[in-house]
Image 1 (cartoon, one colour):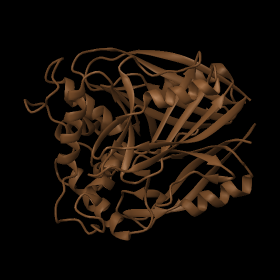
Image 2 (image 1 turned 60 degrees about the vertical axis):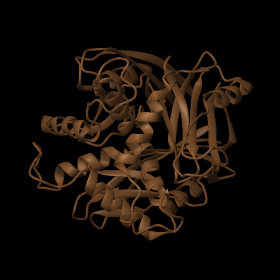
Image 3 (image 1 turned 45 degrees about the horizontal axis):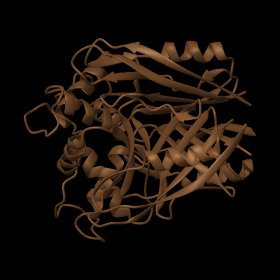
Image 4 (image 1 turned 90 degrees about the vertical axis):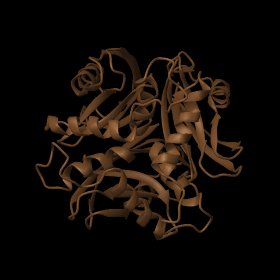
Length: 138
Length: 138
Length: 138
């Protein structure tokens, strides 16, 4: 049994979703685990991680609209140090959380056919984001 | 230290919750881990996993109504390839997520007394669902 | 490779957030892992875990108001065995979930600079809460 850890650096293009499935798969492939457990942690409080539909782009559009409905921008927040998109970004990050875990079998992540791994950027403008990645297995 | 992996197949009966605590416990018991970590991944984007109250069925009724309030069906979605319950199912799955992790001690999951593990089906009709299950420990 | 498990006991002071980052870090430090994976499980269905902003207290005030907006108290719940704050507490716990995972490197949790670990108490009055804590690595 052994383990491997890295920090993945992602430049987002502002509010929206970045598909990081390939980046994760490439790193995992380079580590040579046949069976194990992969863990991801987004190291920010206004960006988050989720697994969702990887085929229809309209799903991401609807997700964006839904985040805006559940945690709208507005003058009703106590915390607005960094502007009107600051607190809504924290709330939307709370909705999906910053953690994911994926079992590994036969050298690959056990994702379903239609599942992709997404980094959700909840601030309006592009940011440099870090994702801690850990694998354990053999 | 060793690990074990399986795919659990669950037939849901349409929208609602399936208690999978016993199925998971049975598989785990057959693997003989005294101490370790259990990970579950629902391999779908319109079904999800959660840990909730295992005693009062009314809790699940209220959860269902709440999911319907936060992510209602309606004509306002861009993605409706599979009908009006398609996009709300993705959103409700996002609310709870598709991952769970449970430490194992003395051969059993360290769940609280009132905690059960549920597969939430968010589509109207029954589906065959797969849950990837991984255990590591000794 | 080795592992360690404990149950952390936390007394909450009623509805709100308890910063448990230091308690977790202290236990982890006492276990001497250089690299590994930390897992937390809140063993309750009306309290939950989340990683959020550790600097501005206003973020927690806004989070509390948001939980109250998404899952308000009211007479419309089927489950109210323990009073009007019972079912909203289950729903708010569902929003954030009861699980967290954090990779460990150089003997420390790989949290971001602004990330803290919080136990969210969703019942009105103080409760004794248990968090199962598991670490694996070397």
